[in-house]
Image (tube, rainbow, N blue to C red):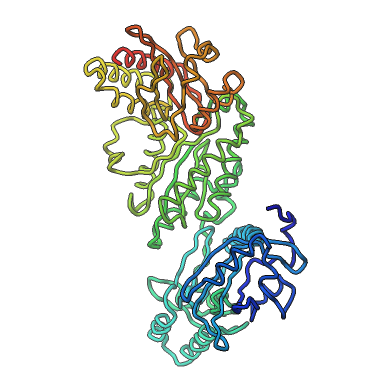
Length: 591
């Protein structure tokens, strides 16, 4: 179905509309949004606005809807000037009777308008967050639907709620705190404004903004009301202090001095003070502390120059801010080290989506400008309060996970789990040394020696343990081993699908790519397309983006090893590649 592409910016394209429809399809009544869409107020037959291709399905659903049933469909509806819009429509038979006749309720969401207005709403949310972060007065709101009254204030990006409770509970508490009749009378006026959803009001009232002492401060209240989509009133406004007792100290993290000039993020001191302030507030929320830095950043600077390195840091800052989207604070600790402390990331699934999105955006941001490897991040995460009740403990655990991510191959995030990662004191590996090339090689020599001894002593029985250790120690996500008949004899790793190598392993175009030591290293699979289309297709469909391969012969049988990296480019140093080839040869000898 091809429909008009001119969906956006039309004044008569609304986001949604509510309609009440007779069994003969006559529109009995609707809200102003729907009337605006169809540009008629009377004489509307709903069948007239349904696209012909969807008429049969709509009528069948409408006519067979029984009391208590609901039906949802995606159809095209025509507006008043003849344009059709994709519409997510919910039909409900709620048993409503008008003039003795059962009628159907319909709620229509016009998808293109919903999309454009949703994007506009996101921009507005970010704008108002910035405004509130610089606003010095206290704010309040009362939502009669959930019956909660709240007084809150923004300091920087942190929102602190000083009062949050049902209105009647708040009223009862205030009557115990207020002493004079005049104070109680002023509060009764304010209470009635909230309860009745008053429009454009102002009054004086004593209110508590200190949850520890319940000390009262005098405020001038200015407010107004609106109606939510649930048709219940919401009263909101601000409180201006009349006395000088209420604190108005601006924390360091809200000042201009707290900003890192290179990236626009908070500096290290600001991040520390903000995090400690949130923890001290005992807000009963979960918060993730996220530490991360750029993989191989020194190599990026050395290869492409410091100006390019600065561009990478700026891009990271933009990606963090865009994806965090007000759900916490972000900072730069110095160099290529960054920090996030979340406020409204409420579960691990949401966290994983956030981190994966950021990593992937950065990884491909410089895809066309870096030939042999992308810009990737290693990330460590700890959780407040599960992993600690103070900044220092959370930091140590997140920092440990960051360098575990480095050790396990980079370009990944690790969320602290004491069962998996041990306590901080149990960390007898000096993880920071992994960043030094000479110490890394020395450490890996010991690891590889242990693997070889394990294979020699246990033979085939050791292959599973050695393969898993390989994937953990090197920058590898999966291992495949084929014999010379292109039969898969061993695999390890979480493959989306296993590549079919039947038309590859015996193909001379493929075999000719092996070097003198019978190995090849492909840092990015797209380069394969030029010399072997079949192999490129198989690897791409399996989400393999880089690999090391080698073959070895024992007892007149040849074995092909493939060490794969999923979803991102990769580059191995000569030392690691040689270690992998040595172990492969030992494994081939026992197959």
